[in-house]
Amino acid sequence: MPLYLTDEQVMLRDAARDFVTDTAPVSHRRALRDADDTTGFSRDLWRRFAKMGFTGILIGADHGGLGLGHVEAGIVLEEIGRNLSPSPFLTTAVAAATALAGSAQGDRWFPGIVAGETVAAIAIDETAKHRDRIAMAAVRSGNGFRLSGEKCFVVHGHVADLLIVAARTAGGPEDRDGVTLFAVPVDAEGLSATAERLADGGLAARLRFDGVTVDADAVIGSVDGGRDLLNRILRAGRTGSAAELIGVGDGAATMTLGYLKDRKQFGVPIGSYQALQHRAAHLYAEMEVARAAVLHAQHSLDAGSAEADEAVSVAKAMATMATTLSVNEAIQMHGGIGMTDDYDIGFFMKRARVLAEWWGDANFHADRLAVTAGY
Image 1 (cartoon, helix red, strand yellow):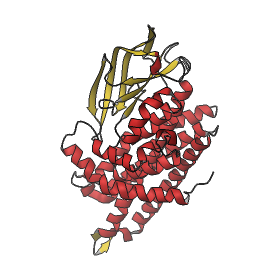
Image 2 (cartoon, one colour; image 1 turned 60 degrees about the vertical axis):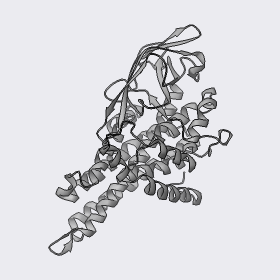
Image 3 (tube, helix red, strand yellow; image 1 turned 45 degrees about the horizontal axis):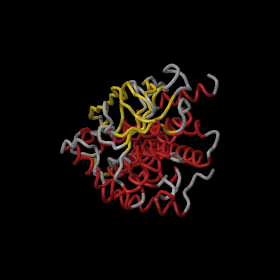
Image 4 (cartoon, helix red, strand yellow; image 1 turned 90 degrees about the vertical axis):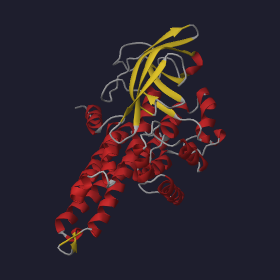
């Protein structure tokens, strides 16, 4: 698989970079935080994403989308990460688009997603850390199901129009089979959401399903057989979050290199000191290796490779570690000013921390790889 972008993908990257830099720079995130915004993103900006065609990047042309792949989605996500732009792109245009592809629910929800009018959230996690564990019950009721239980860390869950919910229709919490996915409208009776502020200033929700009733048409895929689809959603989400992490790390590194060139001590730029040059070179190498791992995972997903699951875990783990190094070095090299709220570099560290936890941190994915290898 080629680890480079085609001419068309480079054109997409340039267009996305110009658009996101102009419309949603770091100052946009700061403004939302300072205003104590309770949505977590700008719906007007989401509609502008739609006008650029980005919201339908993974949605087929038959539904008005672009019908592109995870490489192209990752290009947009990297620019979102580089600018720390608050956006429902990952939950809606990537994870939800993957969940709804080829289903009757896709016919219902895709037009709104493509138009930038619909926001989706993915309700999977039920514990403090991401685990392959689904306990929330979905019991047959009439011609549908009754959902009872709680979900946590549901990004945009308090303002989403659509929830993609993983629930258990058979077996125990640790069982692979017996999982069913549901498309649940946010206004369903018995559903309540409590928004919580995250470290990066964004918002995620704790959702409580108190006997929420949905009809059989809400099922995405098959009853009891949703694990494969859930894994597809997770692969898409994990790869997308890895791409956004690369953007965050690159944005922090770019800001740091600029500071090393501008900041002077004893009459010379601090970047002229060999010790800092070595650290900057090490960071560059780590970021490039991680970027290659993410691109490999994207190509694997687009090609339907049997090794995609492992490639995705490698990408998420490596992107997390490289970006953590980037933001840590950024704070260190900026010195005291890097610890102040007046300087933007701290926003990169906070965003990296949230993305690292989303759908499995580096330790989670390293463990998955070890188990797969027989350890």
